[in-house]
Length: 169
Image (spheres, rainbow, N blue to C red):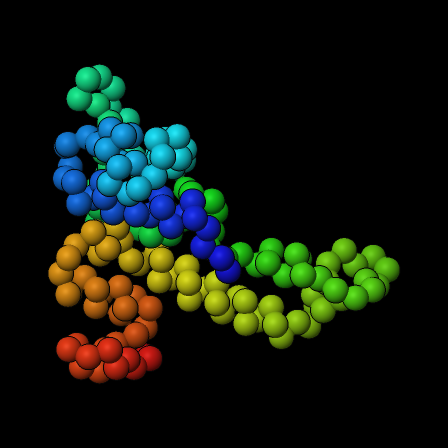
């Protein structure tokens, strides 16, 4: 698993738009300035997010970009999918297939009885579940409750909300 710079900055731009409000468009130069990105890079991010149905472009003198739907209806998974595909996929195994492959088998020699693939499947399920439940609103909100909600989506509880001690469900 690797979060690319494109995904990181795209997520930050989505948070910026969510914090900006529902109907006040942000122009590319404003987005670039607030996130320390070049205008061409901001344009690339906005194009991907627009193609993913997450932002809308408003034309005209006071145009720019706004969220295509409320922040509470935008999952983190949908943002990562729009920016570059799933955070993790089972095709991960094919990239690291090793050894001599038996006749007729196109995948890794362990593809039938691979215990490592089971770990990746579990990782995929947990990651997808957490990213599907966590919303843009959770990140855009400055409340402590939203931070705790994101942790709970991951099966993590702070033993004492005033500390960094964690417990796993």
